[in-house]
View 1 (tube, chains in turn purple, blue):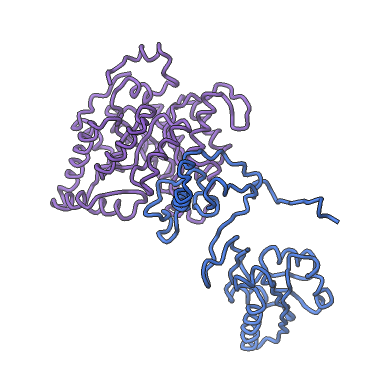
View 2 (spheres, helix red, strand yellow):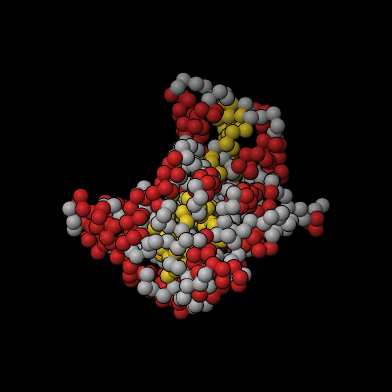
Length: 321
Length: 222
């Protein structure tokens, strides 16, 4: 795809929001996002210091929403800290903890800070976290949350039907897991998310490149890559132990034995570097796959490695907007 | 049917220890079928309590009775004549039966002897599994006859979530993923294309969220 300028895009009316991620993707750049997991405490530095490590190497920064169902600083507050640094946050919202009143309310709150990119998720089950005895909400599911955001943005309406004053102009993303079962509905499921209004996708961490490429082939077969921007999810492994943990303990994760063997095949002190190398090689290979529009690099508690990964993958410098 | 499980005997002992004259009241419906609160369980519990209190040196009168149903005025009337002989009733009915009995016999303490668990089926001998959460607005026509509300841990209406692996749920590898079951059944019915129909945002006002519910049928009222 040839690159387009921001002016061209603005003139054509194709930009629905002021989201930097939307602009980068629609200009035709390979986009790069990363994430900051908010802290288990109230110190804003835990967010701003992580964001500072990656700010020059990514287009936007996801802030996770009580990931693995462990109670943390709220995603919206973390987004505000990122925004106040002049950076572009991506608000992750799960449907586990809030009903439709709270979700819509938080969307308005986000938009009031000009947070204009979000990712809609269902969230890990609370039994994984620190509040196993708590209730879950799931008033809406992730697809219905996508529909809700689009309705609020495009129709300027609340779910209850009333008009919204200054509707939230939010670029809407969803997750996709090419590796979850049953495989045969992974692509139909993506189609469903697109039908609900998803404009970009951040995938589950990819280690099984063959399976991901097969998924992408099926995505292209249905022309879905032309309807949504697909960002491939990448998480560098720090050690063979982490690789095994990801394979065996993290739901919906597909880590082939070869990957574990490769990282376990080097001495312990070199495993982290091997993990980075595997990640960089994967990005270089997937950059060539038609329909892959960007990369979402989730370097969990290892944000300082994001610049190296981005640079070595040939994704630096990032476009100025 | 309503599935219940027996409360631990230690908990029951704590509940009843201060009452001298106790009636253990079983129910011949669901709790009989799920073997938690029928005539047989009333007998077993009564014997266990008698033995316990004899051993402790407490004299107690513990009687047994099992009604056809505790969720029906008609059958609850059968104990009107004897209720005053007891300081408390330990009901082995579901939560409905316990409450209905309490409403009818206002001045007699009513204690629950079982935990009411869910609406389920007798999957195999000694195993009952959930099938319905009484949401008041059935979606089974759209989901291949398998309920995502009662059988998915996140009650995802457009599933499966990313945690489905090898047909099992992320919270428990022994638990079937409801959406895997739905997809398998849609495929077998030749209706897999229906998978892509987006389930609309659900009106939860007909379930618990809408407050205590009532069904009124004027055509059958007398």
